[in-house]
Amino acid sequence: GSFLAISEPHNSDTSTNVGKVYLYTNVGGLYNLTQTIDPPRNSVSLNFGYSLSFSDDVLSIASFAGIVLTTTIFDADETLFDLDQTEFQKVNYDPGVIYVYEKVKNKFIFAESISYDNVTKELRESVIINANHIYVGVPAKENNVYVGALYDYRKKANSKGRNVSRELIQPVDLDKIQ
Image 1 (tube, helix red, strand yellow):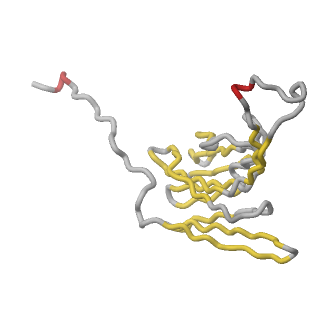
Image 2 (cartoon, rainbow, N blue to C red):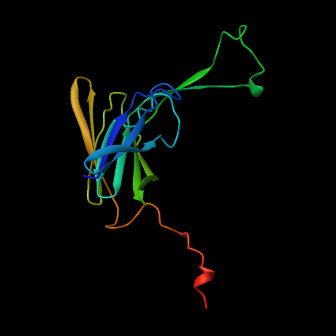
Image 3 (cartoon, helix red, strand yellow):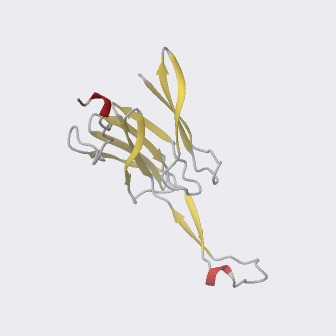
């Protein structure tokens, strides 16, 4: 194909295991880095790029259930507990999310996200795009029994997550007007 996507789900440039995807374009038989895709949101253990899939002009990028610790801050962080040794944190299991990107003028832009909340911490997603369908395999293990689900997300054929609302119109060349 003309594009190659390589993911780095454990990239920690901005936070621990946020992830990143590198997009290469085939030019004369050589692949050149043309775009770096960061996740639309920055969350610890997002693992953006855990699974990738291409179809025509669509790229899906999966993240899997990370553990997100949210620290409670009181009164603009002025109150300290136990000489700043105690923090109040809430543990959130981030459900898996599929980020869908669509090609617009040779760049992939974020179009939509698909999330689901009935996953366990053992979640490991597999994503496959086929025409206007995105299939997400969600295997899991509960009480030493392997269970799971297959989700089929679809949209109308040839529809886009985003529509072009305006385009640059080249100004009139006044030298060509007689």
